Length: 229
Image (tube, rainbow, N blue to C red):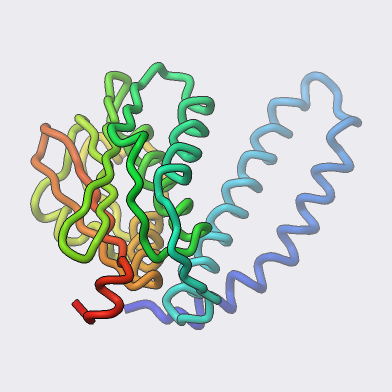
């Protein structure tokens, strides 16, 4: 198992040279000859990718070490889900369909808004990234005992059982033809799991190979907190 503290320290140390690199990129941006532009764009993309990786490592380390300050409030879920769905629809250029089945739900849960937004964005982005051009994403909200469940399903290629068992492990990536050609670090699902657990909830994944993938976020309600369910 990797050392979370070591990863966090390394990530902090990488921030300084990366900041200098980003500053140099910014200063050079308007001084390039046309023949140099394509090389500059590659360097800029690489710097953004590295910054994204460092941020993911830092986010995951903070969540795992419980150093992320979490304050839970009873919050209506529909406006948050609708906001993230609308963002995804605007950003998605492939024509993939995103359907929200519970736009009028009054469900409330004890959440930290920023954490839930991160979970929803990761889940939707994963479906858009891995499920192909004909992907359909269905999002629903429903109540079960003392939880409110947000369900995100797609009709993509799904995962094999062995991959599904390890999907929430940090740095684990499924070993199939779909993921082979797509960049990623294997931290998104781990961050989702830690985020939901920080809100006293739980997250599950369900999939059948070639038939789709489903994430369910079980979010606590006052009833669960009171009864200790």
